[in-house]
Length: 242
Image (cartoon, rainbow, N blue to C red; front, side, top):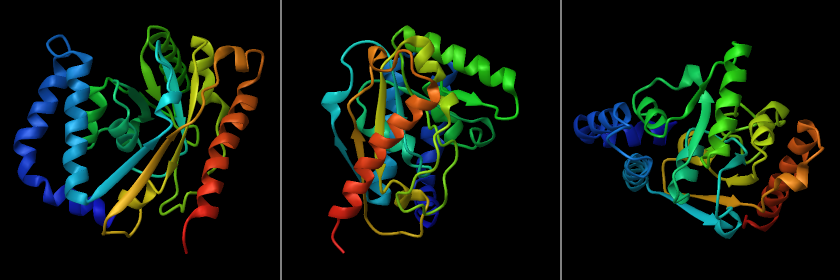
């Protein structure tokens, strides 16, 4: 939280230029391609990283499917999670987030630039529509990030909660690859008391293709994906220096 406030304050001088530019491009997707808008988001992330002395290392980029849409499923650690993934994911991608947290300054602009989905957790009908829309777009080739934990604990020390099976419904409907993503130390950026230099890791793990999970329940898929991410987190916890 300290670093989050620090990064915001240190970038206030850029706000009069960056926020209107982001807002304008978000409001006019007919003028700006998905790649152009995504490039602007990644530029904003780069500025925040530079100010906050944030470094993100990517592993397993060769595991990302080369063609078509897919759904990335990471563990959830904090406000930096989506930014960290987008920072190292070169092709345009979008994400699903809690509607109640999506309308603050800068967050609103990023969601709209990538045409993200706002999920109302108290509206079942709206949630179903989000899943259906996401499935259709993934079938058409878009890439999405969705967090099956839904929530995260402050300063969570790379711990995971349970994975909600419903988070996998869009991928199943689209018969699309599911890419497990292991985030390490992402919580340290904006959801801890750290102020100094931070290095996070994004691990793109081997995907589950449709033929790998066909016939399985979403609860079974959730456990498989969670186990793969947990293995990476456990390896890190045993290998890091003390």
